[in-house]
Length: 149
Image (cartoon, rainbow, N blue to C red; front, top):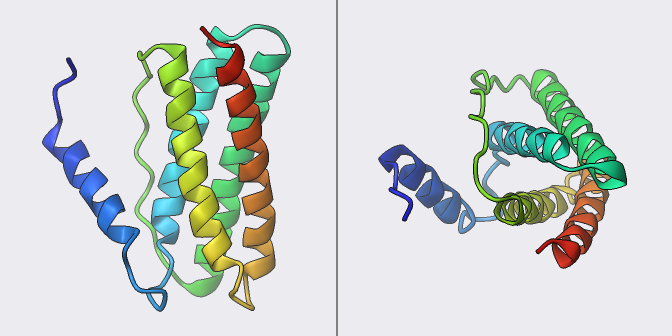
């Protein structure tokens, strides 16, 4: 059984409570950057453990997640928002199917946040594109989960 790290529990509660923030609250762009970098780290790990076209696709998703993080950092630069540096994500050691589920959860969370930001006139079109990318990742992850034992 996995022991709960108090710092991770706090982060989970912050995310849960963040899901209930009023629509007028500004988007947590720093949290989006952290999530994208976390996903990229998991995708890179999975790509090293997965052969063939699936591994290539996972590597592509890692680059895409890094690209999303860079775009969001650019939005922060334009809007004057400063985010702390992202912390490196430790190497994953969970079974592949668990990591695929984790990636799916991260993509689903990103999709919900990005869709909410599409209504903004200044950056909505950017987040619309990011949301489409997350949907494509989710479909692939479901397909991969469907073939993983």
